[in-house]
Structure formats: structure tokens, C-alpha cells
Image (cartoon, rainbow, N blue to C red; front, side, top):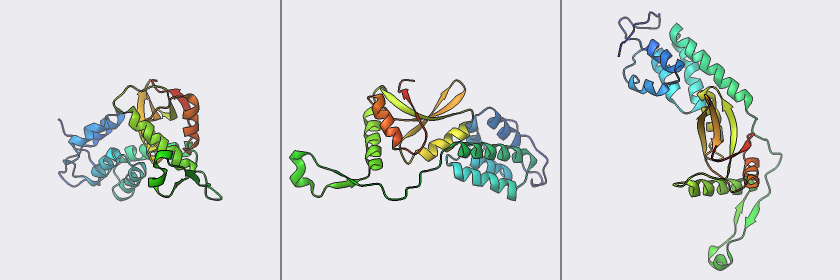
Length: 218
């Protein structure tokens, strides 16, 4: 692997620069290659950008890019940080805000099966959203180890994987999300399937993000 020395006021004298390798990995969407130089980088601007690119936490990545631009300005890394921050802001602007409830959702009582009614104790109180999410978990478990079938939900399609990861991270608290590469696009889908289109639509209503129903095999 060839190491290039990039001139920058932010670099210490004699410090080895990986700026060209970092930029190449970003341009070719091969961020995983940065793992090999993560421990070798010594320049603060490059170390900060590498950490930002490798983290799966969208808000944390944005903070690291801002930190690099503010504390460790570096012409080679500034371009990467600015581009990623622009992608992140675009993804946030494209997503619907979480709904604000004027009052709590009404609770629904789930009665235990008849043969366990005596031993089950007090009935469990669950909101409609919690009930739907519990159903999503069961569907995800039943899908493990077998071929996917039925229908699933898609929440967005992005040319940038960073944007797709940002949306997937926001959906994760509501259900298992997965990024599916397809036709040079990164599609954010629910990693769970439903037996009917109606069931998929009902689950989509329980998650505060716009979605469309697709055959799970797609």
C-alpha cells in the first residue's frame, strides 16, 4: 500500500497522510477499507473523518464531521466532511417528523388465553403501537432460517448509502430495518415479512415514517 504525504497546515511535520486513500474509499463507496488504516492514522483531521465514516450512528457521524471542520481544518478532509454533512441534512429533510400526540394513546387490554387465565395474573396493558411492534418482532423471529415470502415495507430509496443508513437508524427503534442494494440505489426496508398486503399496511401505520408495501421477495 502506497502512502502519500499531503501538505496541510494541520499536519505535523513528517506525519504520514492517508488523505488520498480516504478520498478514494469514499468515492468508490468502499468505506470498509478504512478499517485497515484506522489504527495507523496519526493526523487529527484524518482520524476524525475515519471515525465518522465508520460509525453507524448518523447523528454521531455528523458531530464528528463538524468537529473536523471546526477543530482540525484540512483541505483534503474538509471536502469529505462537507459532502457527508450535506447528504445527512438532505436525508433528514426528506423524512417526516415524528408525530406529536396531544394525549396518550388509549391502552388496550390483551386477555390471556382461556387455559392460562387463572395463572397469568393481571392483564397486560399495551398501546396499539406497542402491540403492532410486538407483532413485528414475532414476524422477524419466524422469518429466521427460512425463505422470505409475503409482503414487506419500504421506507426510502437513496443514491447515497449514508442517507440510507441515517433513515434505517431512525426506523430501528420501531422495527428491524435493512439496507438493500438494488440498481445502484440503497433501499431501506423492514427486515420482516407479512402474510398479506393488509397486514403489512397495518404495520406501516404503526411506524411514523412513510412506507410502501412490496412483495418480500423483491
